[in-house]
Length: 169
Length: 413
Image 1 (cartoon, each protein chain N blue to C red):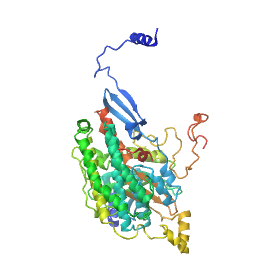
Image 2 (image 1 turned 90 degrees about the vertical axis):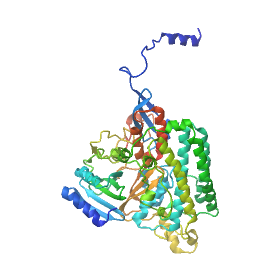
Image 3 (image 1 turned 120 degrees about the vertical axis):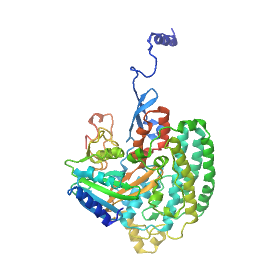
Image 4 (image 1 turned 60 degrees about the vertical axis):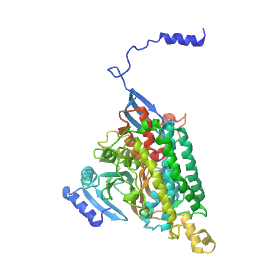
């Protein structure tokens, strides 16, 4: 993790490249995080990648319900030479959850992006195989969203098999 | 006319193709479904393989068959009650999952784990790593036709499970790790039994090597098959023994030590070619290194508390409940409501048996986590299967899948 001033320096570099790309930074509890504009995620990540944070350790989604914009896509980047981590967070709204895919940079983002799509409904533009990955193909809804109820999952029997998943929810 | 001759008659009426089998314009691709229930898929994994003759041209893994929504369930449980459910994700690394989770929660709480607890954690983590590798070695050898390896590996695994039972009361999914330390100190006689195991394990690992390393069938199936270079693996976010087999000595225990791993002297086995044989050798060599770590942790086990003494987070000792009103109140509050974690987010990565196991926890100030996400190495590493087996024989696909060591409980969560 870069120290507080190091994080600010990185954020400033990003602002120099594109003044609207960085929305803020957080440095606390062993975590350095840059909040970015979701429209510019590829440019920001490409810059950080060129800066040494070349390994995408994890990509996951978060639902910040009831705060807006609700959904967050978090990239945990790792610099293997300096052994340094940085997190990049892009928030998108549930009305049009859309963000560019980073598969071009990291082919390993394929499954994690599909998981975020499956669980939170975030569409990754440029992902060539954006299908559900853990839930059934015909499942309706995005179960990791905070307003998706726990339980009440309909069990598929012969009498209701034509109704599809979640038909009586 | 008997049934058999009737069948023969019908057989004769079939016009057989006169074309010579082999590559050509008429040669077509065959789509073969493997799994989801198949002994060689190491769990409920379905593979759709496109074959040209015996050569795999493309493969698509289909997962999600054992998805149980553990991450969703965790959001509905108090922090300390999340531990038993996340242990069941990757069911062969049930000490690693709570380690990553507790590490993330401890980071959010700013809780210091006492040295003895850290050492006890290391002992159990490394026993678990050996146990996980033994299951991998046994089942992989079974996939490659070496049946007796399975029994030998499971014999040593039983010894480890007995040790787990001794320290925690459970053989699997032990709930031994708690936020702040471990649930109980090790019982009398545990250290001696671990010592006996540590003394025996290198000899056993030597025996495995003797059985396998001179086995011509095994060697010819592993050597120079399904090579994938380091850069491709890094692009696919692959970590753990698979990356180390390709020559990159990345190991979080060395690179970013947690839980006192910097106190121990051990080596990181790396491969040179990145083929299946290297993957096999790296994991096999890790058996010795883990044994060394356990030995050092056992010798240097510090005295002191086995769990932090923050009464707002950690249950008070049982005996205090009879004499202290305050302890009783704390106990009651912790068991009914649980402890609250200040708002924040943490990502805590550790080196699991299969690679980087990272736990992301978002706390919203309540007694339940707002989000728990496990970056499970099996899930990410599975993406490397297709590039590994492309243009390889289907028999090598089985060997590669075995060397990939996917745990479907961890993939599907």
